[in-house]
Length: 91
Image (cartoon, rainbow, N blue to C red; front, side, top):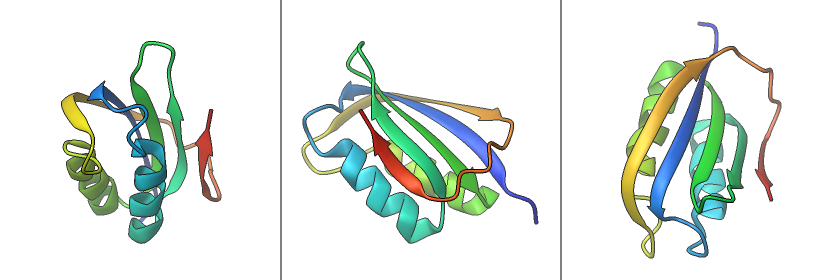
């Protein structure tokens, strides 16, 4: 099965609550590659690649995030595979 690509935009109280680090741990647990980054508009973007089931599990996780987060909305969009080889946190 070939990998798929998803971009998630997470809205709510998602900065300053270890969202990116927690997302990295969850993505690695699921065997996904990509990155998580904070955005100037106080959202977090996650780009992830891997099996569709793992991406669905990550999307489900994004809907609640780590304990201190308050997720109001998650926007998910499919895209072209970029060929990430690890999962990193970007600033």
